[in-house]
Length: 361
Image (cartoon, rainbow, N blue to C red):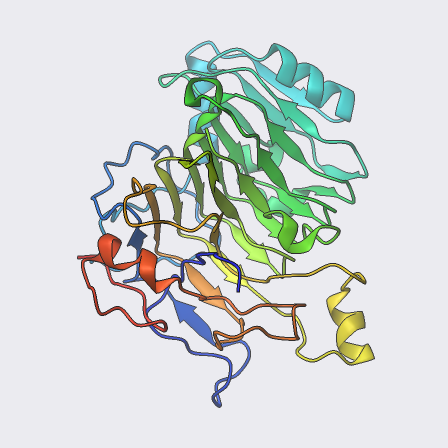
């Protein structure tokens, strides 16, 4: 079995092998996991208040970070305008990339309504600042419109962050990407990586089909810091959002101080390997898949390793198989596979079982 830690977002399961319906909800209201066991100071926090109906609103009070701060796009865009930020309204790929290549701290990029099909990835390289982050969202969200007003579909990858900092990015739909929806590139030095990036208010559906578990739906490589994924819906994707841990020459590297909160993870893959199931799931031949909520990979943690801070809390998981062993052979693996050796230092509970996740203390 691969050395992979998939952090579950709930203490108990409400779907899978028992008589629960496949649409039963696994709630994570009291089940945040802080991999370094410390309280989170909210440094990744950034936003106002506009909550999608699918997003949980009754988060509990036990977790280290009890903050619910969905972005109010109208307020954020208005504040950016008032502070003198330029507003770039874009509606084609050349305009998107030109805006990203010239954007300044405090600027806003608004994407016009439409379905953007088959375009190559957006490359994000320029920096905002802590006081004046760069906003990238759908124009419709400024006026309270729906996330589906802007849809990016049918490409290899939607966006790639290459050492960019201080972004609030989201408010639209990404679907049917062959690779990641969003990738944050590896950096050998955190000073050169992306940091303070908030990916929020996204609807990500059926992404990473062409590569499956070889990549993450959102893939955060080592060397990036303070990357937050929040208030989004992940619908029947072929892999997980993934924070990578890697070891080279005995040295462990990771993306520090991440946070995954107030998301909905849903799965509607059909069990079995019948022709009906394969057609429904749209599995590609020869590609292994892992449908799940959020994952850290791809090197095992050892006793003397420095903990990689990552907080996962206040998420809903719906419709995933509950068994801990592989499903469909190596085609689809269950969510909530726990590497118990990595948990006791984080949770302060040396007797944590394979089917449990510590509640926040």
